[in-house]
Image (cartoon, rainbow, N blue to C red):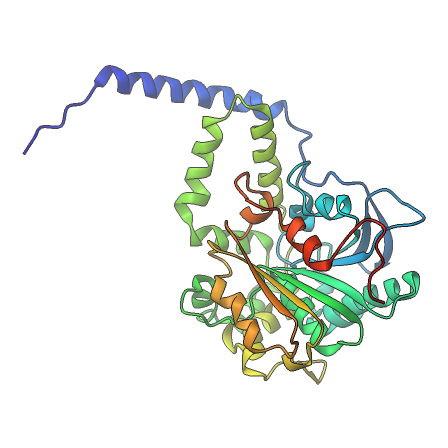
Amino acid sequence: MPRLELDTAAGAGEVRAFAERVARAPSALRGLAEARPGTTPRSCVWQRDAVRLYRYGAQRESAGEPLLIVYALVNRPEMADLESGRSLVAGLVERGRDVYLLDWGYPGAADAGLGLADYLGRYLDGAVDYLRGELGRARLPLLGICQGGTFALCYAALHPDKVERLVLSVTPVDFHTPDDALSHLARHIDVEALVAAHGNLAGDWLNALFLALKPYQLLQQKYLRFLDHVDDRAASATFLRMEHWIFDSPALAARMTREFAVEFYQRNALVAGTLAIAGHPVRLAAVTMPVLNIYARDDHLVPPAASRALAALVGTRDYCEHELAGGHIGIYVGSRAARPVAAVVAEWLGTAVGAAGER
């Protein structure tokens, strides 16, 4: 067996270089204290309780075709507008869309009783009705992201007369696919006991759960990569914005925690056809408007199969799938994304600046 030869001088040099990068990191981060996600100008146009509806881009008398983005309750929607060059929102605005986004806010103790009926009825339906009245449109295009896509899908099934087109991105539909690690964990959690003990579910608890799915990559490797680029101001600013976004985690209302975990993760009620919201059955066959379903090839939170299950469930004849290389978040903010999500969405919607859409 050949002997392993070690170059101790080279090894010592690497250790010194690493220590020097570590020493420079604090000053590099201090110089970027103002780096925060969210760069596209926006204004609040509607509010109900803590939920706000924002309109993005310059306020113009004649704007493009509207698009309402529905984000997840987990983490903040600034991921869709991280920074210049890594912004789904800016990409859509630049391609002629009049972009609106529903911001769920930060649920407090008084919001513990909010459930699916409140979020999809009082808030999402309220925002849609506001825009329909304000814009003079019978129907609106929706773009749902992750859990927000599940909400948008359920809403489209309940209110097909209000949804013109439906775009889903990294959206879980079938919560019982064999490769869904998050689902395997969630199915064995005693949600009733968890909610009884803690009330609203702390965002930090959810963050720990997500990080545990890829502990080396998300807890160690990314910080080593940061140190490799510590002298690159732009790369460091991007890293810091991502860290702000990851750890800015709102709590989940207790009732919503219970309902979503039990109905979707444990019972898989959307696929089983047993889901009802406020007493109204959610029938995916009622989704007859055009649907674009975008999924990420390397998604560890929502495996492709969990999204692609939608094809066999919806009633529309105009259904399109699009695979993007990357992970759950990487397809939006990763430097190696081949085509921005905004380009795929805009192309499918048939967007052109000044073009008139279906009404």
